[in-house]
Length: 79
Image 1 (tube, helix red, strand yellow):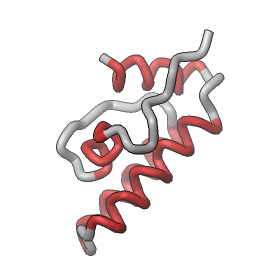
Image 2 (cartoon, one colour; image 1 turned 120 degrees about the vertical axis):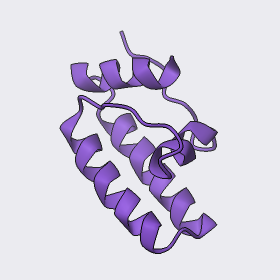
Image 3 (cartoon, rainbow, N blue to C red; image 1 turned 90 degrees about the vertical axis):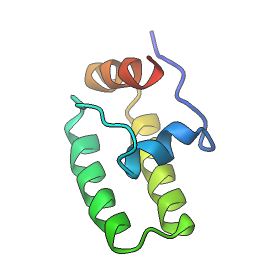
């Protein structure tokens, strides 16, 4: 059973990529991407870069939603 992924405009994605909320993700691709995005955003924290990073992170979850590690991570995000 798949969980519903928060929408692209849900603030949870911005909060994750800016480090306002922190999760220990199981999905390795999300961990790697998040590390990259956080460095990129720390160098240029413009709203456009933050929004692009949030969209990119969400898209990785959306493309891999059937994976068990993604399902576990979505449960963390959805609380």
